[in-house]
Each structure stands twice: as C-alpha cells, then as structure tokens.
Length: 296
Ligand code: ADP
Image: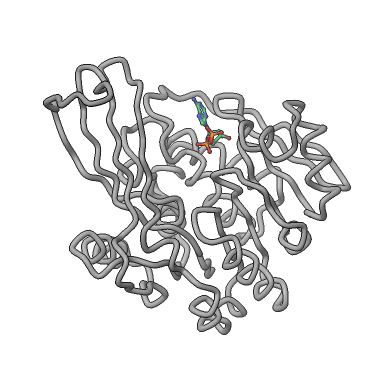
C-alpha cells in the first residue's frame, strides 16, 4: 500500500511558563523542548507507523532544523526524496504554554510556503502509482489545487484534511474524494454548526464523501448513499495534539486495506483515541501493533 502525503513540515519550539508574558514583558521559562510537527509530517509518520509505504512531499530550509526534520522522517522509514530544500528557513511554531495549559502560538510557514506546484509535478508517476494522496492546507492553495488535480487525473484517491480551515476554491472541492474537517473547521467552512447541514453543503460544492471528526464523540460520515455516526472508543485522554492527523492517516490505511467505510472509521477512531493517551505530536502517534492489541 502506497500513500503520498503532500504538506507541511515544522519544528515546534515549546516554552513552558508560569504566566504568559504581557506586552513588553520579559520572563523566564520553566522548561523548554523542541518537537517535530507540521500536519503533513505528522500524517506521514502516522501512516508509516500503521504499515503504509509513504512518500513525503514537502519543503524545508537549508538549516539545522530542516536537516534534523528530514533525518527524523528518514529514520521512520519514510521516502524523503519528495522533500525540497529551500533558502527559506524551515517552518516553525513558537509556542508558550502556561501552568493552566493556556497557550499562545506564532507559526512561521517559512519553507512550507515555498512548496510550489512545479515541485509536486516532479512526482506525477509516484502519485499515479499511489493508492491515496493525503493533503492539508498548510501549504499554498495553488499547490493544493494542482496536486489534487494530478491525483484526480490518475484516479488516485484524494483525502483533503482542510486544516487550518480557510476558503477553498470550488475546483478543489470537485477533485476531492473525501474531505475530513473537525467540527470547528466544518463550521468555519460552511457557516453552520449543524454537522449534517454542514456536510451537505460540502457535498453540494462537489466533494464525494464527508468525514467529520468529533473529538471524544467519535466521527461522522455522509455520502449520497448513507450517513454514519461512528462511536468513539474509551481511553484516558490527556493530550489531543495530532489526533486528527493520525485519524486521517488511519482512514487512508483502512480504505487501502479494503475495509469498508464503517470499519475504516472504527479503525480511525481507535488510532485517533490512542494518540490522545500520550503527550506531544509525533511521539504520540501509535504503531500498528498497539492498535491491533487495542482492537483485541
Ligand atoms: P482534531 O485533532 O483535528 O481536532 P479530533 O479532536 O476530532 O481532531 O480527533 C480526531 C479523532 O480522534 C476523533 O474523531 C476521535 O475518533 C478520536 N478522539 C479524539 N479525542 C478523543 C477522546 N477524548 N476520546 C476518544 N477518541 C478521541
């Protein structure tokens, strides 16, 4: 099973502080760590750990963070030949978290903004051979549109995770097989908090199937044929970071393993839930044997 992930790769710099700094204030952090992130990279790692062959298409800077991130993906066993090294700094997020868990986040897209459609065009053959392309919205919209059009021209399944939510041109909707917003993204894209109504609006824009992730309420599915509400599994959730990312990867893996939609969503719910049981982004993404053990 081959999955191509097209998207962002970031380094997250996380400072733990007693209280978030006020304007003009300098404070001392209690703790600091860096962690690899970016929705694209998270989804690539998740898919690989679930058993897929993964090609990552993305962009990094020619800097130490870029090299580090590329090495980490390589060590996971992901094909990193789709990563473009640019003269722009590697994308990053500067995150401060206070003792109550409130945070401020500044994201610098950096090299992610340099992922151009011409670069993705170099991987037409790989996209053609793939079972599925997974893509998000942390790279230029023009690149998203072109990538999805290539996949559609070869009949490769496209999963669009519309995160972060922003206005999406109609030509993109028409080329997407499955769109996977969470509840907040669905509301932002459609202007309604009603899940069924929102999903119908996305289908009217041309998407074939809609999957809405509902956090601790599981997931929801709508197509022309049917509507499903798939119950969550019970876990001791401590940090929901990257739950949506692993859910998307699991959906691609489940469908590629010829599970039907309901079974794929049950599998994805388990993978998303397991991700919430550990702190962090990529280090919380479960391996296939953990998922299989949980199923039993
Ligand atoms: P996002 O991270 O994009 O906001 P969600 O929070 O909706 O995505 O989580 C993705 C999926 O992970 C959910 O659809 C659900 O299957 C699973 N999940 C998330 N949080 C929990 C939880 N507390 N308990 C059980 N499953 C969860």
